Length: 196
Image (cartoon, rainbow, N blue to C red; front, side, top):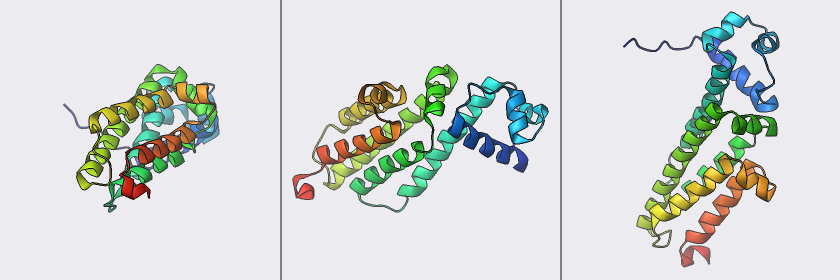
């Protein structure tokens, strides 16, 4: 098995430019010719990133969510209080998703491979939330709750946010839904002395 080649500085820059473009305008309406013109590069340069427009879209979506995960981990690094960790983590998700236009989120929802990348990220977020809840229960800042059950319920809400069901039914963005999830979780599992 040959090792994967690391992207060049130019490829990393193009990936970031594509991410910003897709976040602002979505990706479904673009052809590779459109993208090459907008980014002032050749189609062969884009083909070096991915062999098709569809795979390029998936790569950019995965890049967006990988960046989110890295920023979220940086954001909570050094925080000891499980309440603050959970609050910062969910606030970070909300802020990060605020960068995404409705067109981008719609394109993800309507393109299965991109939707899969979002779903993978959502599952990882649900797992992190479970670990924060477990820690908070152990530290006594959260009530004694069935952490796995609460995390699974949060995971279902995250899945509902990710699939667009929550936003559609409630008329909110994914970012607003994550803010509400944070309020629900923190208010629902905090110990009484924390609430008063």
